[in-house]
Length: 228
Ligand SMILES: CC(C)(COP(=O)(O)OP(=O)(O)OC[C@H]1O[C@@H](n2cnc3c(N)ncnc32)[C@H](O)[C@@H]1O)[C@@H](O)C(=O)NCCC(=O)NCCS
Ligand SMILES: Nc1ncnc2c1ncn2[C@@H]1O[C@H](COP(=O)(O)OP(=O)(O)OP(=O)(O)O)[C@@H](O)[C@H]1O
Image (cartoon, rainbow, N blue to C red; front, side, top):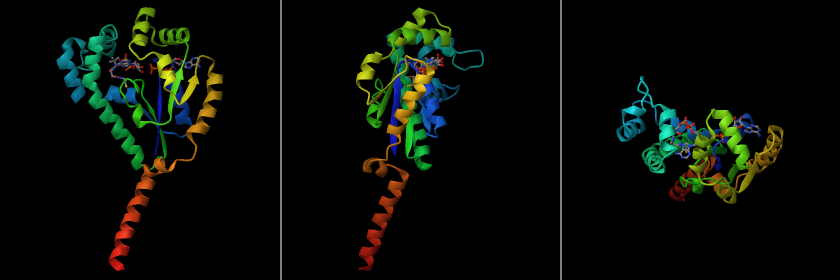
C-alpha cells in the first residue's frame, strides 16, 4: 500500500487538493475530520479536554464550542501544546483505524491529509509527501475570507504551524497553489501521474494483496515440507 502524505499550511488548499484526489477515486483520510470526532461530547478526548480547560469551553448542549477553544489555543502556545498533547493519542489511533479499514478493503494508494504531518512526526509513515504551498499574502487573504476572521486571528493561526517554507523544503512533491483553480487542476494532473505510478515491491508487500501472497507462500512452504 502506498500512503501519500498531504500537508501544507492552514488555508493553503489541502482540502481542495483532497477533493481532487477523491474525484479520481483515491481515498483520503482527513485528520481534521478525525480530530473533530475525537472531540465529540462524551468521548475520551472530550473528557480530557474538558478536565483541562473547564466547562467554560462547552456550549449549552455539552459539545465543545470550537470557536471558543480555538480563540484560546491559537493565542496561547502553551495551551495549544496542552491541547495537542491531550488529543494526539486519540487522533493517531483514529487515523490508524481509518488506514486499517482502507487496507482491509484492498486499497493500493491512499492519501493522508494531515495539516500537522511534520509537527506530529507522522511524515515517517508517508511517501511521497505532497506540500500544498501558497505565498503568505494569498494564504492570509484566503483564510480571512473563508473563515470571516480578522487579520490578527488569521495570523495567529498561521503562526501556530511550522513555517510553510520549511514544510516546502521537506516535500517530495510541491503544489504551488498561489494561482487560479484552473492552474491548480492542471498541476494536479501531473501529481496524479506520480501518485499512481506502479507500486514498488515494498509498497506491494504492505498491501493486503501482498500480505495474502506472503501468507499463502509460507503456508504452501509448510505443506510442501510436510509432504516431502
Ligand atoms: C482548536 C480547534 C477546536 C478549533 O476548531 P476549528 O473548527 O476552528 O478549526 P478546525 O479544526 O477546522 O481546523 C482548521 C485548521 O486549523 C489548523 N489547526 C488545527 N489544530 C491545530 C493545532 N493544534 N495547531 C496548529 N494548527 C492547527 C489546521 O490547519 C486545520 O486544518 C481544533 O482545531 C482542534 O481541536 N485542534 C486540535 C486538534 C488538531 O491538532 N487538529 C489538527 C489535525 S492534525
Ligand atoms: N487556487 C485557488 N484559487 C482560489 N481560491 C482557492 C484556491 N485554492 C483554494 N481556494 C480557497 O481557499 C480556501 C482555503 O482552501 P482549503 O479549505 O482547501 O484549505 P486547507 O488547506 O484545507 O485549509 P485548512 O488548513 O483550514 O483545513 C477555500 O475557501 C478554498 O475554496
